[in-house]
Image (cartoon, rainbow, N blue to C red; front, side, top):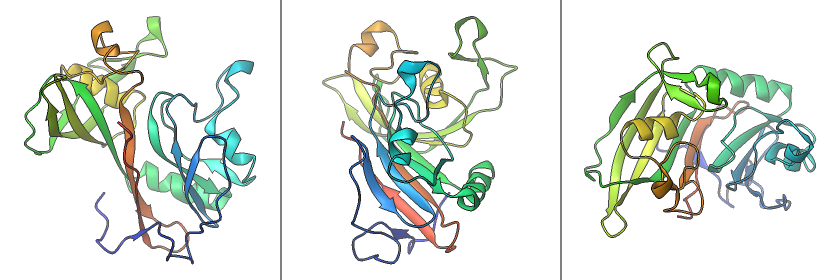
Amino acid sequence: MNLPKNAQTCAPSNTAMCTTDKPALAGITLLYQDASLLVLNKPAGLLSVPGRGADKQDCLSARVRAHFADALVVHRLDMATSGLLLMARGADAQRNINHAFANGMVGKRYVAQVAGLLEADGIWRTIDLPIAVDWPRRPLRVIQTDGKASQTRWRCVAQDAQNQSSRVELEPLTGRSHQLRLHLQALGHPILGDALYAPPEVQAMAPRLLLHACTLELVHPQAGTPMHWDCPADF
């Protein structure tokens, strides 16, 4: 999704839409808030929503709702993935943002460090491989011909010859679980630190999954204004 160049971003001068009075959220950085939505930087290792079991109740949504009682979930990031995550404020905003996600009206971009050297030509390419639940090993997923259609745009932007790895930018065109991790594995370049899909030697190349949601853009559900946020990766 390409928004106009005059899309609003979160800045101190944009006082009508963005406030600098941001509460501490127990390790979560609040990047933007207004009456309709919150934009947060989720740390790696934190669930987006509660899981099954008493030991999986601590999560981003619970921490945020302790400060914003009207905050509602509209999408998720894997526990191991860091970066931009959006929450709606109130049922009307949630309904409008859910509609935007369902109709491909939300732009998302990720950055990842992957094993192996790819040509850093900056050319966008597409991975088009269907994904299905790997039932014997669920919640893992697998590339499978009768799976759900799944597409990811990607490009290589840099090489690290010393560590034999490459930096890639990713734009998921669909929203399947583990899509980016699976598609990069299928490409032959699994993400460093991926404990689910990378071989042991690639897992050992990083202390965490090196996948970060770095860009988010959408039309504001109330004001109708194009909005854009960037959050650089810390790797």
